Length: 300
Image 1 (cartoon, rainbow, N blue to C red):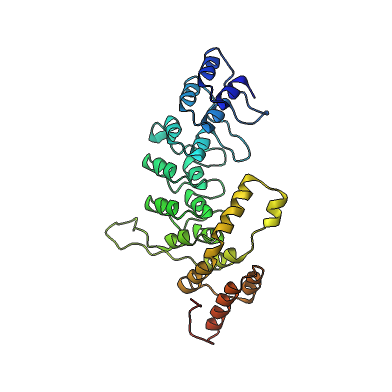
Image 2 (cartoon, helix red, strand yellow):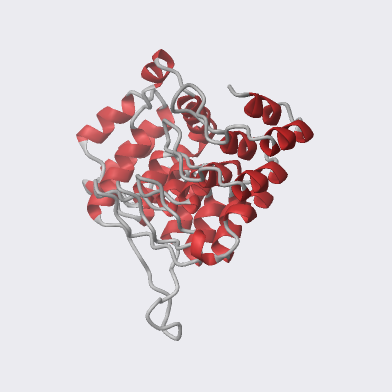
């Protein structure tokens, strides 16, 4: 770590300003390919030093592993608007992509930063942009299970039928995150983009998407693998899924009653791994209804 980085990290703004004035290296990278002073200033939410470093020509495009975060994308991840304002003074900068095609809007959605997402959209961020894997901000919002983010992005023009390169749409992704309210938002009618005078467009996931959604919401997460190789992301994911687990029965009812999900022997076998009697009963009742043994509907 350079003296400049240490001064910024310790919130010694006067010292950092003096070091910059006297020619401190601006773009030295911690540990060879790690963050620069500009990354540190963004993470510390020090808009004065961020502005000064940019004014002095600091590298604004260096990406730090493992997520390829440029200083702009890190600002979106932190979600601090005064720093974002420095990087995005006008609409021409708002959709800048890193080498993997990710934009600030995608990163802000991935981190669940609702206010940052709104701010970026107000400045013209394109809600349908996608990265090299075909993931958009809406896919990220569905993954983190944030219904408010999903709604804001849909209202801004994101589409629920957008597919990743693996063919995934936001709806099965939301179901895999046990995000009941996000899934409901994705099923709501969307404004007709061709003519606002026409009725809202009613989108419904395909049979294949519904089948995937059903499987994703029933498959036990690989907790043991995550514990063996723990990361901040895996810890956050474990916490997210455990907090959302009580919504699984209602999500199953949504998939079965509203989306026509079909229950197979394989699905019932997958569900048994959860060891949740309520889930087994919901699936058993749906299976009996499919086979014509009782009226449609699942237990309340």
